[in-house]
Image 1 (cartoon, rainbow, N blue to C red):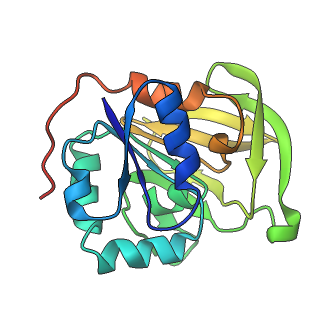
Image 2: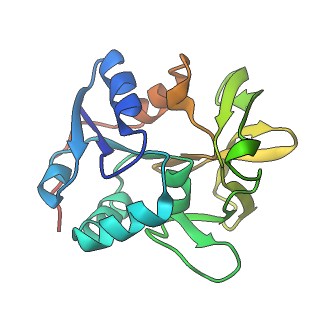
Image 3: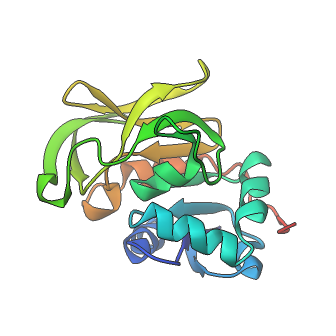
Length: 195
């Protein structure tokens, strides 16, 4: 099984370390060719605007969108949640637009408002959730979307079909449960071609 991480900017190495710890072969995704043969992909935290621009500039946006819509398991954390969201804020902006949620940038405040708290995530009732200038899930736009994580009275993680997205950074903790959840969703290694 090959698990990749979008390696254009942000905390991609941490995702790759966890995938490797769980027994997957790993790959940094920087070019269109890097998408071929992937079984799962992490979209890391970082700067969503920068990552979205680079996805477009490098010709990765549409091939990646097609792979996600075709069933590639994908995990978006923080900025990755923003990249996946169907709506960002109230102005209709979007990047991949495959996840039926509306997100708000920096819902918890600026960088100085970053924090760590315990919350529910997956099957873990006390998951250490790390927030760094994090977005928030303001609205779920499809009833098929499952709530996977909550903290402080907010929805902090969702699953929609093959897409897993979190406002926090599970890759910055020792808990591998959410990465395992993504890898378990890989039905069988398949050859996927970038369009």
